[in-house]
Each structure stands twice: as structure tokens, then as C-alpha cells.
Length: 488
Image 1 (tube, helix red, strand yellow):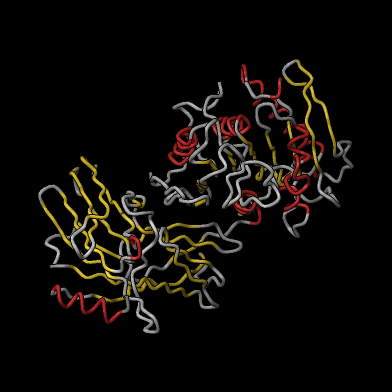
Image 2 (tube, one colour; image 1 turned 90 degrees about the vertical axis):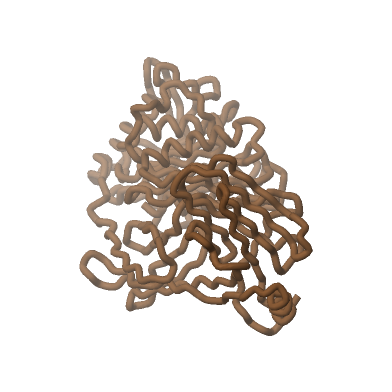
């Protein structure tokens, strides 16, 4: 259906198509008032972005093409870029229905008693339908809109972006209830998120510099030659002999402080599994981060794979957290470690162990990565655990071992501690993944959630595949975690 056909239908119905563009723009600068070049400015959750030039200026245009069947009687309901927005000042029943031009109802979603807040739905291009009638009921008030996709062959008209939300009869895809926001990232600066109440406005943002003094060299940086070498090591902890494997970066420099990464195995797994990378080998060693670090120019790291008692992480009497303390103390005394850049990561039971460290040692670890985490460790988190720590979680919505809700519980705990805006990240559709960055988090404590469909209980899912194993060479998870850790 081309643009002329759509306009003919609209004219027949007596509806006026509204096509306009909103422009969000401004300048990115630092505390000294100087513009920041090459800053990436992203409008979330819409995914639109721009990169600043030498003048620090950005500009993001949001195209809107929506026609109301009649003027809205209130400001509670609006459209923008193919997204329906409902703003509730108080709790109320909300119902959203989608019809074709014949009056056939294609989709419906109801919220019997929605709390006050902002709710958004993606209004999709249902089975190729170019024009949809959208009916929104809030209590006794009803608004009716026409959603028209105007992009036709050769006409170049802007249109609302109508994403695929599944087959007819499926539910509407509801977007997280939170305001639009701008996220700004730039080399040498802390990432910053700013809420945007109006998409047609000027928003100037000031970034804080990542201080060069943020490096904290350990005592092992005193130009000493370490006795600790790469390979399997043992240590006394809690009256027991414990073991771990350590990998010191190639061309180690005892005057350069290196980030230190602890990687915990799953139940039944071993330190050798983490260090060796299993069937994928070196490219999956330490969940894929070792190769990334070894081949990077500026992000070399020291890696440690601890061995759990009985190939698990029971953490009885906090023994495994203390074991980590003891390893950290020894390594920092022997090797040149940046004490401000300690990281922990783990899969399944190892993810639960990582969670415990995030709760109990937020002043020691800079960030943690939890793959399909278990939320049942003793000595883990409780209501008194409130200190912030950067967190990234990765979880399958079809995980048969540790349910998706288990990962959500862990995620929401850290999001609350980090001061982020509460939200429900979208789930992927069709053997793919979607990563969501939480908004409003305290500076330096970002929270990211990567949900994936298919693969089940695995740290190495592959888009388009239901096979949950053997994907360490091609999985997307290693790139996401690497990017998350190296931002600090």
C-alpha cells in the first residue's frame, strides 16, 4: 500500500494525517566548559543516536506519523515514533485494542488496575497491515487513533516505525514504563544518563572526567619480581588448602597496575574448565575475556579461576567469600594490580557466587557479571546490603535450571542499590537477544540486563540457535561483558 492509497483511505474516513518531526539537540561539554568531540549520544529506549563533532553538538530527529480520529480530550494518551504512551496520574484500569479498517480486532491487552506511572506499547505492523485503528480506554474515558505507515515505494515520506510484535492474536509488546532518556558515552569521561521530558527541546549535558588518579596500585607494583607465575596455585584459607589457576598477561610489566578478574565455574565445573575454555578452547577461556585482554592494546588483565569445594560454591560460613579475600590479598602483594578495577564473573552456581561478592564486597569489586545466576547462596545478600556496584546480568527467558525470575530478582536488587529507575526490560522474540541499560543509575554504577531467547541454561548463547553449548567461539556474551568491564 503506497502513500496515495493510505491518504485516500484516511480522507474517506475523514481523518487528518499528522506528519512531523521532533528534534532533540544540544551540546556535550566537560566541567571546564569545553566541547566534547566523538561523544555518542543515544536516545533510549528508541535506539536513535548521534555522535558529536569538534563543537560538541548533537542532533537527534524523531519522526512521527500518526493521525488521531479526533482530537484527544486529555493529555494522558499520545503517540510518537510508533509507540503509544499512556500517562497515569493515579491507578486506573487501562485497555489497548488494535483493529484493522474492517473493524476486526487484531490485538488486545488490558491492565485491570495499573498503578500510577508511564506505560508504553509498540504498535506493530500487524500481518502487513499499513493502517491500524488504536482504541485506548482509561477507566470510562476512550481515545481512538489511526496509526498509518506512510512509507511507500519511491516517495521517501517519513513514517512511524512499526516494529514486528508477533503474529495476529499475540499480545502487544509493552515497553518499559519510564521516561525517554539520553545516554552519553565518551572516551575519558564517565557515562551519563539524563531524563528527557520533551523530544522537541535543547538538552545540554556536562560530563565528568575519569580522573587519571583513579588507578590504585597494589603493593606488588613496587618494582619487585613476583614469585607468583601463571598456572595452578594453592593457598591456605579457612584451615583448608584451596587451589586456583592464574593467568598473568603476556609481557607483564611490574610497574603497570592491571585489572584483576575472578571467574567462577558452574556446579560440577572446575577451574580447568574456566581456564581452558572447554571445547571452544582459548577463545572461551575465562568466558571469552582472556583472549580479548591478551590481544588488546590497552586493556591487559590478570585472570583467576578459583576451584570450589566439591566443584560447587556452598559458601558455608562465608568460606568462599573469605577464600576470595585471601586470593586477592596474596595476588595484590605479589603482582601489580589496580585495586580500583577488580571484577568478578560466573555462570549458574558461579553466578550465585559472583552475586554474593557483589553484595558483600562492593567496596572491593568495581563490577560483576552474572550469567544465568542462582539466587540461593548462604551469606549472600540481605536487606542491609545497599552499597552500589556496577552490574551486568545475562539470562535466558527459557532457562529450565535457574528460572528467568531468579535472574530478575538478582538484577532488581542491584538496580535498587545503584539508584536506577525501576523498570521491566523487554524480552527478545525469536532466538535472539536484547540488552537493556537501566536509566537514572548513580554515576559510575551502571546496570545492564541482557535477555536472550533459546539456548536455555548457558553462558554462551548464539542468536538463531537453540543449542546452548559449544558457542564460546561465536557467542555475543563475551563482547557485551568485555565492553561493560572495560568502560571503567
